[in-house]
Length: 171
Length: 232
Figure (cartoon, helix red, strand yellow):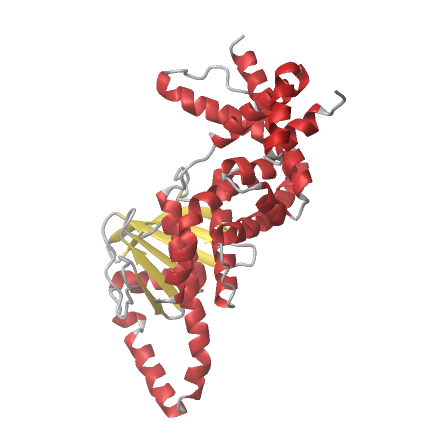
């Protein structure tokens, strides 16, 4: 079996995980897909140099986080030059039964991006893709207690922000 | 009881308490409004975050697969090169000459020869299209510059021009019917596409989503661009 087949067999099962992280490490969907591809290419380079991690999920998550942090920094440099209008919650959304799920999803997504970067990253790793606090600590290089505090405060803020937006939309 | 509700709730929700401590805290929760609210809000926040989990789109899976396969091929070529250097020079010259003869544009189907000549000339000299949408605004560092309509030996194509700041160029030709296969085309195993190098121009041809021919100077750049465009 070719080495790239072995690599893909080991790493493609965690594509969902990498995709979900990339979506919360960078904001635009297209950028997130580029980040996923670059994560796999970086991992593949390491693989060809003999790096065969026992567990691919935390390995890919760490690569994705490091690449994602670089992009966030670049994006924030760019946004100092381009002032985007603030995103208002859409007021005239069609609340047909099929649309409800998507509307709520968009609300939660917006609230997630209102958290601090560290809270958003901790929540993505722990709640969205399911790493344990100890794993998140290893991936982010922060103490477990710090991770738990970020996740807890992030969850509370998320609940509050989504609640507030629901009240604004539907008084 | 003096306590910090946020810390207490965090420790409790992290599962860091032993059975006895847990039971004590749960009893305390019933009486302490502040702790109860902390735990409730965190539960709700966790549920909201969990609901964001989504399945990776299938085209992304294909794109990752294609880009790793392309990186693997280029790595194999890079490793083979020193071996080739050891082969007797005469053999090399003969092989190189044969390759050159086989792949001279004159021996290629007219459409392919015209596409290569157009790429080398920096454009097809067609009619610029003002309102056409780019298939992708960017392909990595390459940015869409514009599109033109042109005829290549009777085949009508739309040519999209992509360039990066370093001056590298990739041209995407999209046609309504298939491109003829180039002489010397290689078919990667399991793929519907073919690639060939003609006059130092790398060509990658795909049938889907529409008949497309991608041209560039660098094999890896062309393959990565094809993966980003979802050509297959």
